[in-house]
Image (cartoon, rainbow, N blue to C red; front, side, top):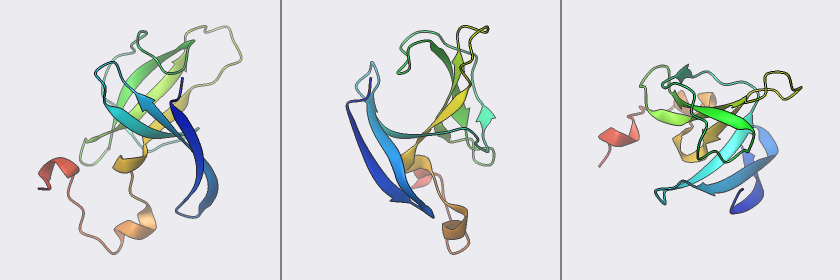
Length: 111
């Protein structure tokens, strides 16, 4: 379902798959996937308009500033071997080693 895919170096990790998606309203998101993330669930599960068929999704937020950081994808078939995973919006992520040197404001507060 991705519009495009590329490998990139992100923080200490090399060859991270970055996928470009477009939501039904036309907003574009560069997304990376991961098995773990320090986030909070900000919505109930939704089954429609998913980029990964067979998965429901939940909106995720930053546990500190509550800014949207991505989605959790949960298998619709509870009896399958499929596992949940996180799709994180690349532009909304900040790496810990970068944060030590920055004063960070949520993007909504920046002009």
